Structure formats: C-alpha cells, structure tokens
Amino acid sequence: MSTFTFAPATRETAKARIAVQGPGGSGKTKTSLRMAEALAAGGLIGVVDSERGSALKYAPVPGRPDIEAHEFVHLPMAFCSPENLIAAVKSAEEARLAVLIIDSWSHYWAGKGGLLARVDEESKKAGNYGGKFTAWGPVNELEQDMLDALLNFPGHVIVTMRTKNEYSMEGKNVTKVGVKTVQREGAEYEVDVVIDMVAGTGTVTKTRYTALNGACVHHPGEAFAEAILEQLGQGVDPVQVIVDELIADGLTYEKALELHGRAKGRNLLGADLMHPKTGAPAKLGPVIVEYGQAVKPVTTGVTSPPPPSSATTAGQADDSRPAEETRAAPLDPPADPGQDQGPTPVTAPQMRMMHACFTKVGLGSKDSREHRLRATALIIGRQIGTANELTKDEAQTLLDTLTNYGERGETAASDFAAMVRGLEDAAREIAEQDARRSVPQPA
Image (cartoon, rainbow, N blue to C red; front, side, top):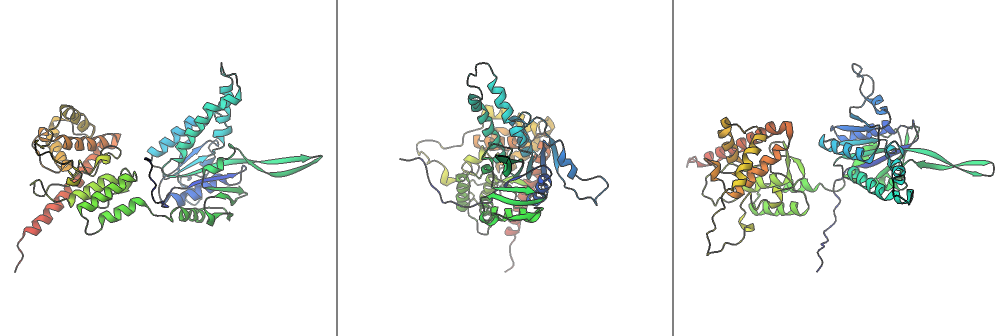
C-alpha cells in the first residue's frame, strides 16, 4: 500500500520572489526599495549590499525630511560567498525582516568569493584531476544551499542582477543580439517575477502570473508591488481561516480538536499570528489549545481552573497537543480496567530541568518561589502547593513553555512575565463571569 496521500490543492497567500535586472544606472536599487515599501506594509526592510554601499544613497538624510528617502536596515557585504549569504538570510530571519533585498545577486555568481571563484579554487586543489569539470560538484551543492536559504526566507525577497549586452559579428558588421544576465543561466526560473530595467522603465519579461505578463511600467514602485501582492493574495490564508473558526461563536471542544488536527496535518501548529484576544505574538497551536481548554467540559472536579498557557514551543509540544495539554478524552488510550490509571508523577530529571528553565526567565532565585508557583498554576490550569504535586504531563507542559521563553535571550524574562500577566487577566475575567452567573436573578 502506498504511503503517499494526495490532498486538495489550494492557492494560499505566499511571499513575493522578485528579480530586478538591468545594466548599471538603470534604477535596480531604487526600484527595489520602492516596491519593498509596499510589500513590507510597515514592516522592516533590509538590504544586503555588495554594491559598495550604493543603497545608502537612498537612505534618509538627518535633518532633511524634504529629500526623498527610504527607511531600511543595511548590511554591507564585500566577500560574496554562498556561506555569507546564507548567514545574512539567517540574520534577516532573526531580525524578522518583512522584505529582504539582495543587491546584487550577481556578485554571488561572479564576484569576490562567488560561485565562479569557488570553482577555480576547487579545480586547483590537490587530487582534483578533472579540473573545473569535477570542481562543479561541491560548488553546485553550495549553490543549492544558498538558494534554499533565500527561497525559504519567510518574508518577501527581491534580488537585483546585472546585465551586459551581447553582440554578434558577421564579417565587419557588429550587431547587438540582446542582453545576458550576470548569473547562472536559468536563474530567472527561481523567482516568480523578473523585471528588466532600462533607464528607469521596467518590463516584466518572466512571470508565473498571467495578469503581469509583459507589463511595462515607468519607475515601478508601490502600484506595481500591489499588483504582485494581488496575484499572491488571490488564495486564502490557511491560518486565518482556522483562527476565524476558532473565535466564532459556539466553539465546542470537539471543534477545537478538529481544528487542531487540521492545523497539525498542514504543519501549521508553529505558524506565527497575533493572539486574537491580547494582540501579542503567538503560535497557532497553543492558541487552539487555549481556546479548546476554555470550552472543555469540566471532569476533574476543579472549579474554574485558570486557562492554560498559550506559549508552548511550536515544534515540540504542539505536535502532541491537545492530547497532553488538555487531557482530551477522545484522544486518550482506552483504560485497562485491571490496572490503576492514575497520572504518572513528575520525574526527577524534570524537576532538575525546571530550576534551570525558571532561571532563564528570571525566576530562579529563592525569593521567587511564590511567583514560580503562581506561573506554574496558570500554565497547567490548576493550583499546586509544591512542584512535587505535578504530574509528568503537567511538568512537560511547564518545561515546554519555559523552554520556549528561555530561548529568547535578553527578552526572555520580560516576555515570560507579560505572558503570565495575560493568563492572570484571562483567569480573572473567567472568575468574574462565574461570579456573575452565580448571583440569583430577580424573579
């Protein structure tokens, strides 16, 4: 039996992959910045600049708001190796750039440290008897790693490429036959839209979108970027679809389980979003768990438990939720009537890890015990007097949450404290609602 399964195809919101090519002075950098402003929608724009700082000519001039300029962060790059570009893309991800501009991508092909230079290096190594022919093997792997990093960047990507004129000679006559891009042949197939720039005018020479094919625009900018976004956004955002169903009136625990399963099946549990209630950055999986627990039928005998954490790690705890975090009865294994099905207590390794994890979020001192217990109660959904009262599953939920915040470096303590305050506010709101329900109504 085949292990592969076909699923219905959908067109979902994607990120732009654009190439702007042309000779020197044709407006590649300016066009890229103008389009980036529309693509970023207020987010951060970053430029990896291998053009000796040419992008800085378009940066703001202090004290001169009258001069047209573009806001962006700048990374100069003199040695254009594939490894350096991969590292730059990683830094762009960590900085949460909305748009990344590589100016110019041609240098990573024919510049200092580029792929052609690497082929020369490989061909001269001892033991390489095939010259440049066999030297392409490891270089091709480097190029693929570079492409993977660039095309998998979570934001929009714009690359600029230089072009040079090509000529043919018949007898004594020299004829211009076209232009050649300074990049590996076929590089244009790695992007969705290619814009050829000539003296400030851009013409779409390759695109996956019929509506843009052959478009010719003088000084492409915001309007052109919006046309690209329109093509990208004709589908639906799968994360927003799930969130809309999650926050709709009448949510049931069974529906939350179904939404969690759908998100897991599409690898969306770790997708970023703004929390529907608090507006804080969150992950889809923990948000589904939070809403599901809020409507879960009470079976533990605990009255009005605080809501669970909305902050477990995306790639670890989420894959097993809500089965563990919500003790979902439909997902639990059937009980063996001949055995005691009591919960497994917290383990010694988990206890040792807790202290280290609490230290990373600023609650490791002896004086912070009450704060640790309060945070723990909010995260696991019930009051405890000591960590020894935790079950193994509760301890794992706590450790997943602590690990997620502990990995945030300088903001770990403040982010964790903000999350705890959010849980406290939600618990207070639930308690107030319960109190109002318990007040006898006049006949």
